[in-house]
Image 1 (cartoon, one colour):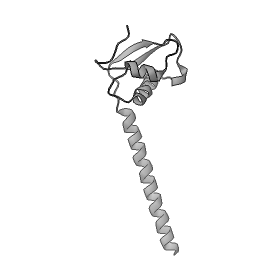
Image 2 (cartoon, helix red, strand yellow; image 1 turned 30 degrees about the vertical axis):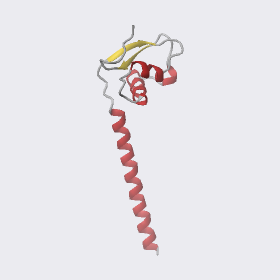
Image 3 (tube, helix red, strand yellow; image 1 turned 180 degrees about the horizontal axis):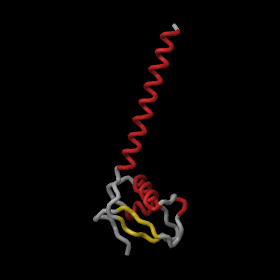
Length: 100
């Protein structure tokens, strides 16, 4: 019985480690999937959120969560740290709206 229990524990450990590694790889791939090429400068206004800015100015074919993560990364900010008047860079495409 002890041998069978040890084999099961070993198998479960290997499966668990494999699942964790796959999830980490998938997480890394999804964060890297939005390449930062062209950006547009945006001056933060009162009431702005990264979520709304990403919706208005980011590439329309991308998930907003990805765009927000990229905006945070390239500007080295947290979503809650936006300040009125702050200028941030937003990843964009030619079809995205530009600031007037």
